[in-house]
Structure formats: C-alpha cells, structure tokens
Length: 241
Image (cartoon, rainbow, N blue to C red; front, side):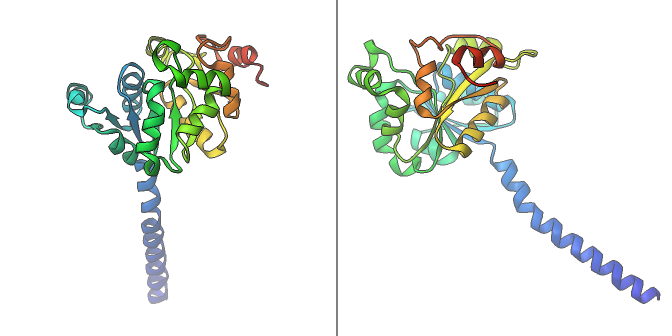
C-alpha cells in the first residue's frame, strides 16, 4: 500500500515538473514581448519611450547618430538601449515610427526586410513646409494609404499622431477619465498590440477604423488636437460607443 502510494506521488510530481517546464518558454516569451523599438527619438519618440520604460518595457531608441542618444539612455537606465534605426526595428516586437514624414520613402526602402510583418505604430504627420512632395501625396491619397505605401509589408497602425507631444506628457496616466488616443489600422492583431501600447503608456485607446479612417484625426483635420475622454472622442469622430 505504502509502495503504491509512493509511486502515485512520484508520478504526480513528475507530471507537475513536466508541466512547469513546458510553461517556462511561454512565460519567458510573455516577459520578452515587452520590447519596442523607436525610430526617431526626438520629442514624440523620447516622450513615449519614457512612458513605456516606466510601464516595464525595454525600449530601443534609435537615430542616424546613435552616439547622441547616450545621455538619454544613461538617464533612463538598463531598460533603455540605443543604436541605428535598423537595430531598433530588429529589436522590437513592435516599432514606433516618429521621424519627419519626408523620411518615410527612404526609411521604407532601407529597412524593407526588417519591417516585413512588423507591427508599426505610425506617429508621423505630414507638414507642407517641411515634407514637400510627400505632403502633396498625403493630401491626395490620405495619410494612412501613404504610410502603408512607404512602409510596405509592415502591419501599420496610426497612433499617437493626433496631438502634440506636450499634450501626451501632461496627460499620461492621469486619473479617470484618461485621455483618449485614436488609432486606426487594417490588421486586427496589430490593432490589439497598439491598444496595449496606448494603454500601457497611460491613455485610453479608441479604435476609429481601418487605415483610411486615420484621415479623420490627422493633423489639420477636425479630429486633431483634442484632449478628450474615450466617450467624448468617439462622439467627436463618429465612432459607435
């Protein structure tokens, strides 16, 4: 009887050990998934990177001159890294693009392989005085379609482009109701990733629709520049509650 009981106990222990071993990769993968690359580490990239590090993410800041990012990385500690845009794209499970919009054609060409199937949070805005012919293309075709063209192969979600970075600095993680951030994209899983990143940065995500819907909150549109709660923003943009 005692021998049978011991065998049963041993079998149960072995099964538990196997289950724990099988679970470890999933746990590790979950922890490692909190990695984001940032292409363009100026006002918007630096602001959001700080917020994500505060939320427990590892953040890879990038620039064409990564040595200039050393003070930022030193300030933010071991979860902050710096390198080239290609390094940031390779590092992140998702990538924030926050560079002048005129850089999109070259950025897309140089990083076509790295961007393929990558979730890209597209925070750029087209400005006539700065972006020239690319601005004219945005005016003609819409900013969602233009981003998708130049970031071909990426799973693009428009987010964090509907307000100035100072508005994000001021309102991140404020008491309820939190500031709402509109997002738009064609890929449902990429939208879910964007929703998580918006929420973890301290805001309420509002899915407005597919990429073409990004025109409703692009710079210069009636949906741009608002500090609203989620219900208020949905009403403003005509999104169903």
